[in-house]
Length: 204
Image 1: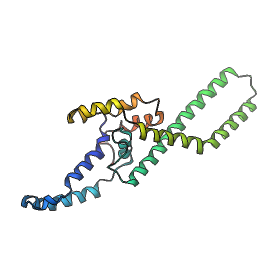
Image 2: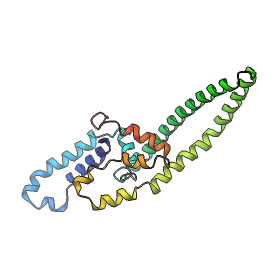
Image 3: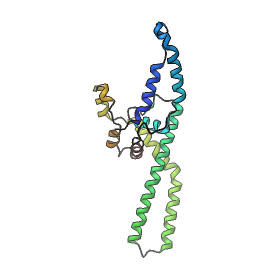
Image 4: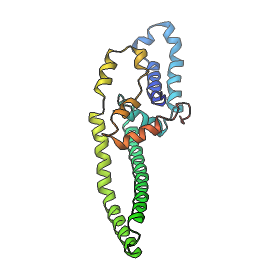
């Protein structure tokens, strides 16, 4: 069961509990605690600097994908991290596919002129590089937009509304990615990687 996706909700919930209300100054007991609550919240604001992986797990949890707890800057930064991860996975997949293609070519066309083969590969790679900035970026953005718009598992949503708080805390976002990997292939790969990091191992 991944745990890193509960870091930001847990910390933000604690910050909220430390906020003062108009009723807090009416009680003498609450007045005594005002100093500690105020300075406790300020200390958390200074100490708790979220690592990119915390932001990504918040985004990749379908229940918190809108990142309402975060600032606009944090949300935009997170999306940039996600896009960088997409590029990395695409590059790895492309390298693997290229190696496999090269092996197949060698097996079935040993008699093909070596010079011609090199030139063909060169031209294909040039075409792919020319398409990369527009086509790939559009595909990545489309996958992100679709996830933000439709990325809630209706079955999970129904179960969540009918479940107790203890059951809800055991929600595993990886179940969503397991069942929707064909819809969001790149995001699924990123989710598998970031959710494998224990909450205690990530920087805070």
